[in-house]
Length: 86
Image (cartoon, rainbow, N blue to C red; front, side):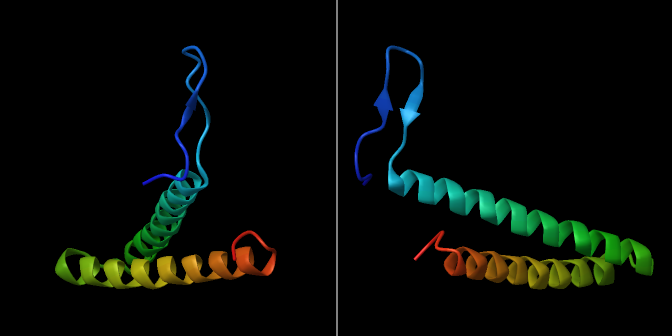
């Protein structure tokens, strides 16, 4: 259920997307950025601590989730403060 159909122009591809589609794409991009940054920082931490195996995986997963959530909250707050989202 999109707000309006996607517009095509003589085979030149998509020239306009709906507000709903932009929202979905923005959310997907934010999830990838926040999750990727959390995972990268967690990987650096686990490597620096010399952890491996199950313990390393658990520490990495927990740290990655905490950082990803913090990044998501910070980004959301900034967008709300500067009028990017309501």
